[in-house]
Image 1 (cartoon, rainbow, N blue to C red):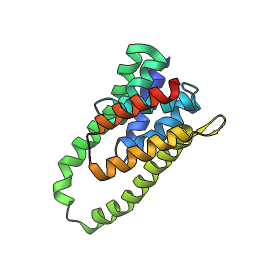
Image 2 (cartoon, one colour):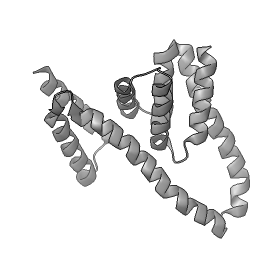
Image 3 (spheres, helix red, strand yellow):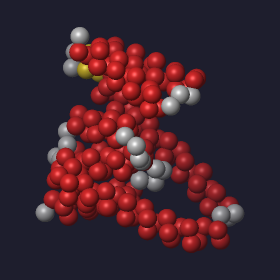
Image 4 (cartoon, helix red, strand yellow):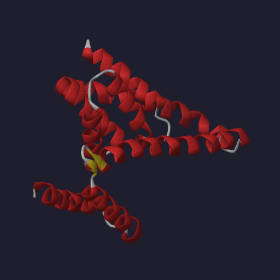
Length: 178
């Protein structure tokens, strides 16, 4: 039954996604492609949509994956599966964190987790960048230029990401429709 498979898959994602939404992307990618629910290209499209819409990227990705795999009920099940472990874990941690937040062991553990999370985010970024930058005929110069201009503009001018997404959509639409 696809709903139980989605629920269990996204419960696992929710349990394994330490570090936030970006850290969940490689886990989601692995599960959805290994189960044959989505191709790598379809997953990249879902990440693009999830990043471009309001809300946390991983929840959006779970919701969009659920829709693609099993329609609206699939979206509800995938989203619930992703959120449930997080809600339970946050409740438990919040109940005990105040007691242990000054512990050197907790600080040491956090010091080890942070670099791993950065690595997970970087792995997802490299996968998506490869899809965006390397088309079937070699490097996609237009995509590389849109990325470079967006990146530099975001880092220097600190504009609204929504404006950058809209502008990149317009530029991409113009470039790729010609």
